[in-house]
Each structure stands twice: as C-alpha cells, then as structure tokens.
Image (cartoon, rainbow, N blue to C red; front, side, top):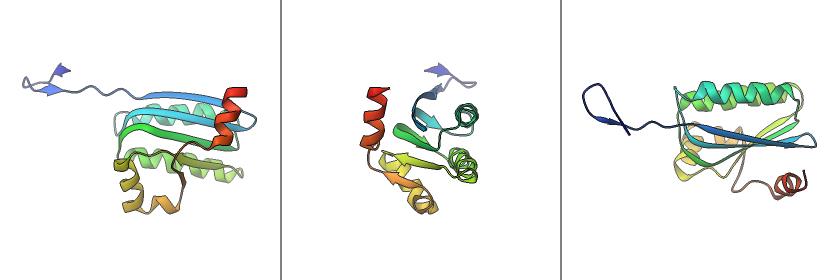
Length: 128
C-alpha cells in the first residue's frame, strides 16, 4: 500500500506475465489486474510473443482478478492478429468476475473459453 495525494491508501497492482512456448503453441499466464494502466504491458507481451509466430495462444487468466474494457481490447487485438494468419487465441480459467465480463460483453462467444488450461498444452510445457 502507498499513500495517495490525500492520504488515502492506494493499492499498487502489478501485472505479471509469463509465457511458455512449445511446438507452435504458447501459454501466457497473467496475474493481477488488466486495466488502463496495465494493458500496455500486456499489449507489449502479446506483440513480442506474436513475433515468434505461435499458431495457438492460450491465455491463462486464473490469477487475473479484474479485466476492464481496455484489457478486453488487448485480447481482441491479439485474436485479430492471430486469426489473420490462421491462428487462435483462447481464454483459460477465468475467475468469476472475468467470466462475467466475457458473458456480458458477448466475448464468451468470440473466444474459446476453457475452464482450465487445456491438458495437451500442460503436457507440452512439462516436456518442453
């Protein structure tokens, strides 16, 4: 916690991103909050990842506490770039608050949403 301008406590939320790639697939594990302040970091990570050319990207959102429209736009942008080259972006393990945002916005029908990270990718990670 840090003190804001008027002495109120302001929580500093860090966005953590870790990516593992194997055989044309990548799992991007994200932790924290995706909002106006942290979305540029996620965008940078996607840009870096997409330069390496995986066809299938699964974003593990099991540790994402909050995602606003800015964060959803980053995901949509990455999805568009992947689809342009025949790839896919999938969302795995969203917490209830994030799942609700996906449902309310209709994005749960745009993204493939998994309850957990697909087992075939976990196996690939452990082997790779």
